[in-house]
Image (cartoon, rainbow, N blue to C red):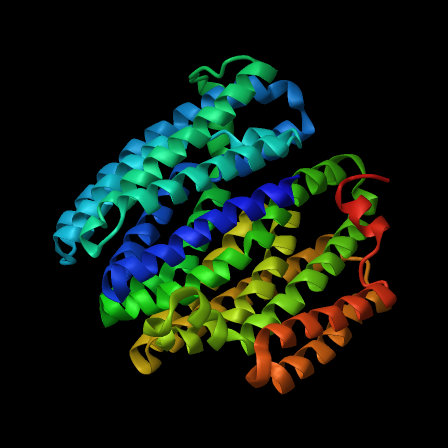
Length: 457
């Protein structure tokens, strides 16, 4: 159910993005991309690691759900107001023009509104169907409002309004479901609970914020150093990659509560769980990364049009980011589940430092493609650091089946290379069919792997 809901939500969101890219034009789309990147930074600051700690605590003791819900909402609203004020100040300081300043002000209101989202509570109790429904409703409403309200580049200010309204509807859906199941959520401020949350959450919060900095650094750097049009081209490639990374979000939502329970109740089986998860990540991430790399040109043309052709090399570079991000999530959430918040924060800080240096230097030397390369380098550093720590704590169970996705990707790549100039949709279908056949024959992923990931013995 989570997969279907996430796919539906991502499709609506992606359609809205493609529509806006064509209607607004490259320059205005770059302005919107910059404002959304700042919004993402502010949103992550309101989470401050609280949601991850809340999920872990509730997964291990569900009786704490009402107490943690009320305190976390109160803390997030406080942080949200502060973040919104900072966005307004940033709009006044930056020399980005009246349009960007206006976008930052309205998106600042969205930062406060999204603090009421209760997705994390349903993740913790593993009732993800409600999350799927809320995400789908939010994205569908957003897409509909964008189609109705935005017809020319001059309508750009209506985009954040549509976003805030759609987010409020998703919030209402989740609050209604939560109230029916657990009682109406109420604001709370229990000093002891808040101190405990802050003490454990701050390393995660800093690391998560730095991760978001890393994720959106390319858009921000390109916008500041290369201008709005270059930012629009970079944003186009970025949006395709992060549409595909719905896989990462689904994995995080499913995996974290399960690995948290295993870490407490069955620590001796962590290696088996992580090994099964690794096989599933490789089975899904490998073909996606290969496909994006070899079909970057038709993908950009199909979604955004010829005006965004300069985004093709950016997408080719960022294709590697998909698999790297999935593997990083496996290692980092395993560390969090076992209480290694500070190692998580340290590794993230080091990787983001490499990323920022790489993005800025890459943008200066090689333009948008260089900025994308800096992101990939930073993610690689984070993965190596997280992976080394994970190997010391709970080495994954690895056997010959772990190599099957790599072998199955070879005919996929060969078919795409040989047939893409003739008919790329046919090449994609044949390549995917060959990959799936070899994956299943080689037992790269089995039903028992899926059951283990879901926490079933």
